[in-house]
Length: 171
Image 1: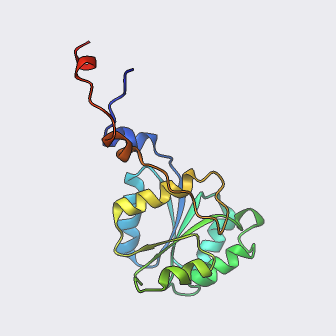
Image 2 (image 1 turned 60 degrees about the horizontal axis):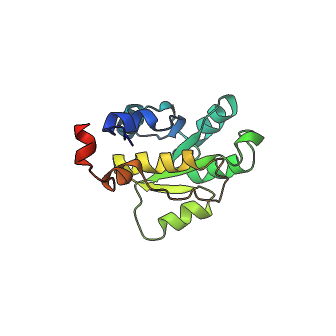
């Protein structure tokens, strides 16, 4: 049996690509996060605060939202509550919302989950954790609000368990 060579490039090509709404008010964080997301092959739209996020969600189609928690005008907690209440459209009520916050204190994860967000990433952003979290939620076929995506074995882990067959290499 012939196994294809798996490289960083083939993993990126095989990864699911998404339309992501990044809700972030800090210019430097916007540039960093959007650059990381684009390198992963995602399309990114930016909202500067929660009210703008609701407007963009109501007018567009997104696969998931990366939501800062501390925002001007309407913070991430209020915006999430409004999304869950249908104020961005009935079709957006159960969409995946991943919190991105500088708060890395004990209990912060529980706070964002209790607020209706699906998952939590702390800043500064860890690029690999960002990629893994997005892929986990994209692969959770219709992962509904409140139901975390199942953890699955990544392709990188699968390649390390492959056996090397020297005889097959000579054929």
